[in-house]
Length: 315
Ligand code: AHR
Image (spheres, rainbow, N blue to C red):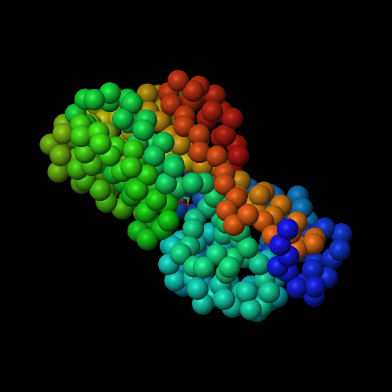
């Protein structure tokens, strides 16, 4: 077992194993249903553990996140949770947190900084998620020609980069499948719809599109609307595979308008607080990456039931 925490810092958190009293949470924003659920669950987890959570919504801007972290440091919080909007540009502020002996836990997205600058990262294997989505399509089309359009997440974010890589890995060597158009939809429903409209226009009104791969469900839901407005049947004329497993995509799957989704749990805070608790109790250093599951759901997995099970969970 490696001990990182200074004696002073451990004493500051108490010898009982109790978690920090005050935790700053720099959240990206509210671009998707998944993001809303992560915020809700983080607040719930904090409340259950008696933590005073200082919440900051960055409205998709890295500079707002950096300012929030600096403010958390100035306030002397016990720990910081950071869901980083993009992967690059965090070194200085993470060094400042380290200098102040405030552990930082990354939630759901990765950064390209040296791992010594944060305590741990809780998230899924984002490349694997893309691979699961791509493999579903490979199996589904079973050798038939398939022209794919791709809605990417926020440019420069680790899920956009890794989910693209994963999907490409899965279709590699399957020459029947080709990504013919790929553009960011910024993880939002509105942008997903807008970009899908342009894809449909450019691809014979949609006649030349076999499948949509969206880096999250919200963009897929926006795209479903665009496909319907173009007079096509989403889920049949155009296959749809996406990532997150939010209630709305299960509703679409139950209606036959979407085909598959890869689950990303919004409960990143539970494992993060557990790791912080152990660290603060006696300096136990967690693994650098605490991995959550990536489960595939299709129309055969009781989408109506999944919708019912999830609809009140804060999405
Ligand atoms: O970082 C996780 C991604 O961010 C989710 O898949 C997406 O919905 C969110 O906005």
